[in-house]
Amino acid sequence: MFASRSLFSYMPSHKHQQPLRNAFERVLNASLLRGRVAGISYRLGGLGKVRVTRRDVELDPERRLAQPLRIGFASDFHAGPTTHPAVFDDLLAAIRAEAPDVMLLGGDYVCFDAENVAALADFFAGARAPLGTYAVIGNHDTWNGRGIIEEALRAGGVEVLVNRSVALPTPFRDVSVCGIDDPWTGNPSAAATFAGAGAVRIYLTHSPDGLYRLERQRFDVAFAGHTHGGQIALPDGAPLFRPSGPSSREFCYGRYDQPENGPLIVSRGVGCSGIPLRLNADPELLICTLR
Image (cartoon, rainbow, N blue to C red; front, side):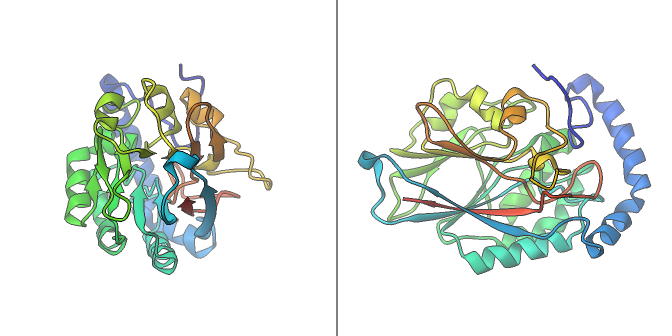
């Protein structure tokens, strides 16, 4: 099922290989001088500049909203030695300028160590949206200690969705955010994720491979990260590296309309994994208007 690995899915996901992964990450952490290389890269523009991408999704007539819903989405923060914390400040400034109604976070909050999530404390607290901020968990979070990360998210006022849905407040009570556990390293259950969901369903999954965990459930729009848009791409945005996983390889960045469902929108994410460098794949805040 996993045809190849990208720059940022550099180690296997099998639990029995966790000691090997940990050893590899210790070596990589030391080679990055515990974040100093990322600081240099940020100052030289090597981590890219936070960009806002706008997309519109029009619902079927029978589920049309009384007023537009502005959704913010950011993913793949990778707090730790590969991502300078100033990137999170830049992202937060963009969120405040855009002022979305609801904010969604797509997982992979850390690299190497769950304790690195502390670098995101101010971001979590500052990224609260009027209708709530909701998060799912990614593979790096599961590998490195998801309990600590989930606790940090909740401490910052973020609601963590693990195989469950939540209805948005009035006037969007018919809209549910449905968050599934990481498709490969978690314990995903589409039946639990969509249980009790409203007529309009926002599917939140760390990776595009959440499509393979749907179990014929329906959604109106889906958001995913994980791919980084390649992190290193050609000038036209074509990724040089694609992550493992069938949908992640096929749907690496952009909007992909799905048969019998709404579109899947895949973000480039925010931080770096593997090395502190983004090329032609700038950090992204996605603003999607649902009508």
